[in-house]
Image (cartoon, rainbow over all chains, first blue to last red; front, side, top):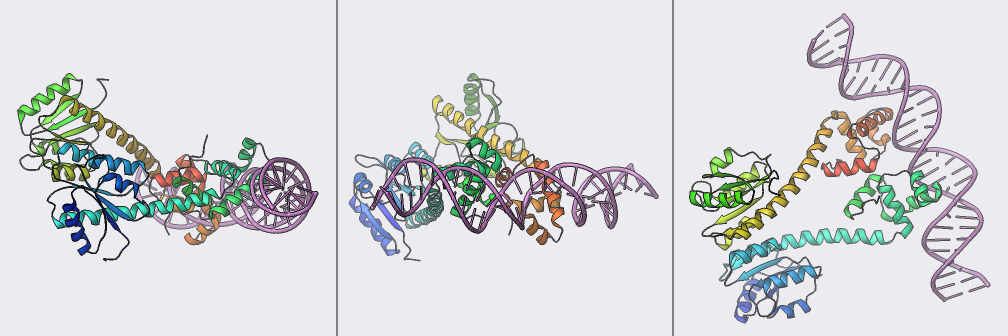
Length: 207
Length: 207
DNA sequence: TGTCGAGTTGGCCCAAGGGCCAACAGCGGG
DNA sequence: CCCGCTGTTGGCCCTTGGGCCAACTCGACA
């Protein structure tokens, strides 16, 4: 399993650490991209590539935790593993709370690092799968016209065509048409499926 | 806000710590129950009481992490705060991964402890609210006869009465009756509501 | 100005949902 | 042995949902 599409992004200001870890990971068949500064990493970072980040905690400029925040803020759910020489417990707590996969101390054992990476890979692939599902859903949802979306919300809320019609001030027949189009565009055949789909997309069904 | 129903369960083998923290928390209006051994705590523990646990990590017999596991295994989702004299990073990581609210080191500052407790209280009340919703749901679900539950699963899966009838080997009319009873017993008026309710209860809708 | 998509509505007709009343068969308890 | 619950089914009838075809309006765009 040395050739899956998974890249380890290594960020550490100590080049010797970078080199050593890169060698270790490459030997295990991992792709590695290393950066000596947080900003360099952030500005060259492509969240669409599957992978995880291994961050040093103490770095000039942005420290590891701040970098983790920045990653999260930029919409990336890239799994983060911390690696630190002088770690303390409060920092560990903050990192883990912020969703870090692991918090390792230098010198790190190969097995610890590899296990953390394996864990990160699992997380990443799960997050990507969820993300993919959600985005394909939103794509289909985007095909709906505003009116259709409006009707859909009412349908999902469990209202009858007649009620929807009176709320929207149109004829019941019109609602039927919109409703049919919604089902067709979203590729569902039952209201039950429509409801589940709406739930996943976070559609409340408005008052 | 000194009189909400929230108890801090304190577990530490050092009586002087127990005493000091108890005094601090009582002064702040918290209820406190203290235990000098993990087993004492576990066997006297009532998960139905709102509260959080503050555990020492290093204790004779069951250590803090094991106690946290035991709590989780016993079905309690009691928030846990760790308090330790000699904590290390790997232990911190494991504790946080296992869902600890915080991992504090002795001597602990009053504000850190109180903030962690406040956080634990928020978690506990959220968990309790979710739990309460789920249990009332299960209560209503328990009112259904086996046949009704079966029909419900098919309805939630989006099948037509006719299809359900053929699968269950009965007449369509019978399904209508069961279906009506399900809706009545669960107090929902639309299939949409039924689906949402089933989702919350984790009913897949079977193949 | 003509075309196109979105939104609208009508008629026709059939399928599906569902309320009401009645009835029957097992099965466990009193 | 009768009662009540569960599960079953039938008939009757009305409401809802929804497919097919046709038509109209309006704003946008070429």
